[in-house]
Image (cartoon, rainbow, N blue to C red):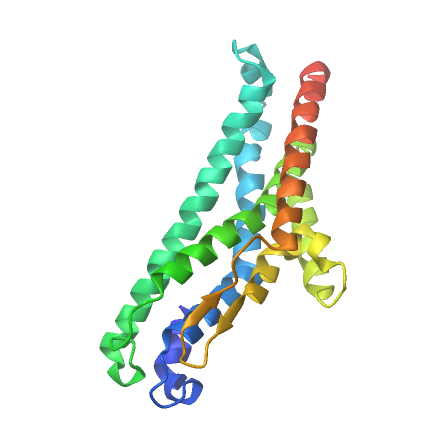
Length: 230
């Protein structure tokens, strides 16, 4: 919404005459989401989902079901992954729709004269989804370990602030909370105004996958521990 208003009122100052506006619009919008909105959404999502069982003390009921601990862990994790993907897909749809709307209300910005970079946006979506897995996994484990809603939330916000502070650090690719932002380094605007997404999986994305895999193992161990403790 913010970038829509920026382009609506100041779009003629952000774009060169005759420039394809889509690449610049997508980059600015994706930057806004990756830096703050998406990580905060994941932090809140994982904390709220696990808090359902914590508040209702429903873990004993889950353990009484004739299913293994892996099924309990996997079912909630699958819901988190689906909600994460759904949120990002909805964001892409709204992003492209807002660009089309800008083309209607501000035809001089030339959104209607150029095709939306659907392939590039979908590729960017795939990279971003992979980059968010590390944050999701860590927050899931934190929410399993601490019954308080506030502690995982504070941990996530602290991790995000630390990642944004350390963005110039040479080893920032190993920090999972920075991975969604690092995806932006694979985006470039071509001289003709088109969007170019670098192929291949970046170091930050591989690191995010590693953190996610480690979180699944630790989460399973925590469920076994919690079963005995409860």
